[in-house]
Length: 137
Image (cartoon, rainbow, N blue to C red):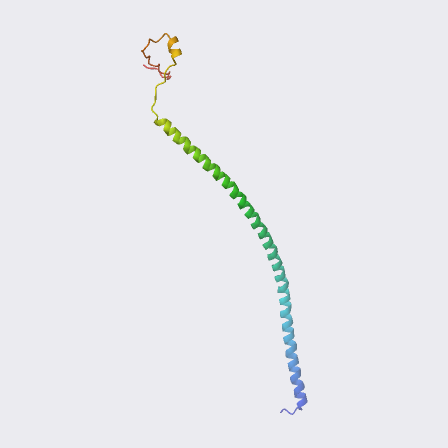
């Protein structure tokens, strides 16, 4: 070959391979350092996510409690509103029935009619108009 003994060629090739291996090991070492740094950041991130999840679970539980309480409150308010609506409907119906009844004039009790001397029997006096505050002219 180049006039070098076979042993030296093998040693040179082993040296080159050793240099390549050392370079590749250095490259892998840098990658491992970055991976470990990322692993620390990832562990930190996972810890923060676990903490946030626990906070969210407590918030959801509190919201569920609030929803149940609001539901109970609204249910009682709806029952009260329904009761008041039924009562109002009953009162309106009663008012309509009262309004549709024929109106009868009020009659004086017989004891008052007998003691009042300003009115002859069988004679009706028209009531006086109420004072309106306006002068007639």
